[in-house]
Length: 95
Image (cartoon, rainbow, N blue to C red; front, top):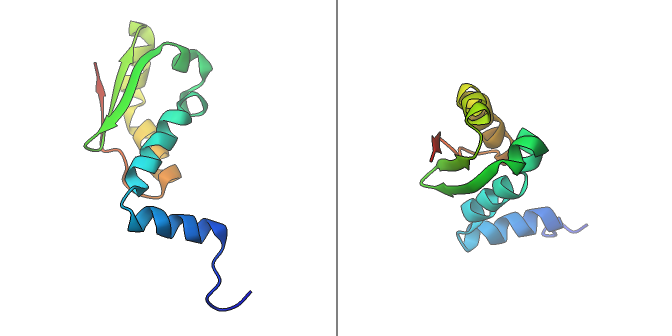
């Protein structure tokens, strides 16, 4: 590999930065991996999920699951941010 050659991953990362779409790309990744993050049973009861201004908005149909997620709020935020390698989410808002 020549000194100015980049891996495909590096090239894609640079493109996302240049076009200022990295955050949106990462946010879409969170939504796509929500079932892996919380489990399929919780994901199946998630009626709405979106990110705005570093806040993850959730509408959960089960009050029991909603209460569990409230208790796990910090762990969920930390896991999302760790996976993204940046502060993507600062809070979770339950609708």
